[in-house]
Length: 56
Length: 472
Image (cartoon, rainbow over all chains, first blue to last red; front, side, top):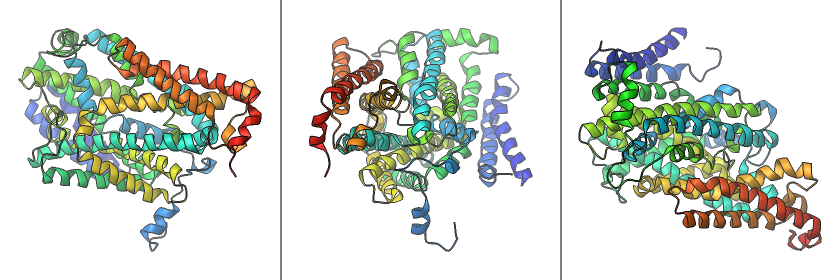
């Protein structure tokens, strides 16, 4: 189950990182919206499998 | 729980310790509180409050310092007042107050509390529904509307309200688990939306942020028809918008599960993520909306503007994570009125009531007035309970007098409560204050002092008369 946890973390990174790339001028606003949605869905679909379970 | 047990049996087995201290084996670690408060204080309403400061012409320096210091005071109020009282008694405010005040005052308090909790939960359901309506292309009521716009909108309300009520029905563990799931993600959406919107306001680097903040976002000039907000407005709002929870001790329901009183510091996560970062982010988004010509943006529109579909999901979830603990608390308030009825049945009923109320958009439009009225009623009660728990033993006065003497009414409590509410309301009218929240602290102090004096007179000089009101 550890790999699911890492997918959740990746989802969180994809949620926040594009915003910094937009402010740094390295990503367009439209691409930011798309990557953020992918990251959010990745987190929301994987986190329920581990976040409230002990010892994962 | 056994898989072949009926749902009714499983729900009946969930013990929320409504009328007994939380036992040692049921206390929770720090992480449970971080998840819950971080989720609870990042609500859909943050998309309303942040823009409020922009529209009321708060200056950037006042917003930053006001939020920084106000949220510090709020965190300290939870840590120094609410959590110590909760950990010492391990009881809900409702049951603790019943022991102090007697059945009649606590019944009055519980009815007021349950109704106001339902009103707040209804507003959260309404905000979530507004975002979902945007996705489905259904016409949603605006912030000034009082009546539902369509049957489809009412169906969305019932869908969201049902999920919230069911989660709250399963008790503290499920409420906490639900918040834990979304707590790491929601702040990131707010932060990302705020940051990514900065270039459209002219921010080219972090160094140029402050200049844009002063000149374009928090300009210090109110919108037409709006009053001017100063440092004091921001500070008091940040400190006291949740005064019913901390100084009013409503969050004893939550912190009675804390292993240690210092877990009250977990509230800092809710304050600085939800009431600092999220308010600043939504203020930035409001400035973007104003710049694009939308002078009256809704929470859903603001979220969509800054974060697209992820923002819409965030607003829906943000409403849920705030409404869940609110309905849980409302269930506990009603449980105190009907101690022989299962908590889960009452919580489900309360959730249904909140859902029905949410069909009226007035509960969103008048949210600030409900919160102000809630602070008016709840904060003086917190002072009474604190004085009774911590000061009475040191002064040689009897704590929990109503329980000890079997009183239906402890008149000291009722006098302190009613006089402080009336007095602070009159002061509010006399000073023509902008916020009722400005009067919450005078009401809190007056109530504590009046209760102390009246209880001293009652217990030292009138104690023989107390037995006249004793129960059979």
